[in-house]
Length: 173
Ligand SMILES: Cc1cc2nc3c(=O)[nH]c(=O)nc-3n(C[C@H](O)[C@H](O)[C@H](O)COP(=O)(O)O)c2cc1C
Image (cartoon, rainbow, N blue to C red):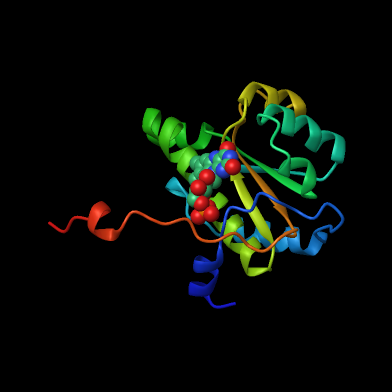
């Protein structure tokens, strides 16, 4: 699929076919795309937890306001940041901004890679961090930043949500 087609086709997909799994090779492809993202100082602050276990996904769903796509779709990738490298190099700005931006860049690569493979995906940011950390027994230094749901669509890809026009969000100086 052409780059522009992928960009235009990506949607937040909220309905998944629970009967269709995502092969491990595709998950690997998606993660390989994720780590090609840029990162502040090349710290690569991202850490990925690929959750396929149904019971664990159920617990993540509870931590994410009961969002049912987490149990419907076969894969949830929990993307955490390890701010230590960014903090060492850039202090406060590294710890609280760059490490999060690293994760955001990797997350977008994941969404686009999933789209290119014909899969649906959803970036879930509304969740209780403490609960997700407990479900995955995360070490202290890791902060869960994004959950990404990946699977096969059960209905047609949703229509594109309208964007604020460029004229509203861009200024040339
Ligand atoms: C930081 C961030 C957090 C988000 N959190 C959620 C979420 O918790 N639940 C959800 O259904 N969608 C979530 N989304 C998806 C947005 O709602 C979606 O991207 C937006 O409505 C535009 O739709 P589109 O992705 O189909 O273009 C999130 C997206 C981002 C970037």
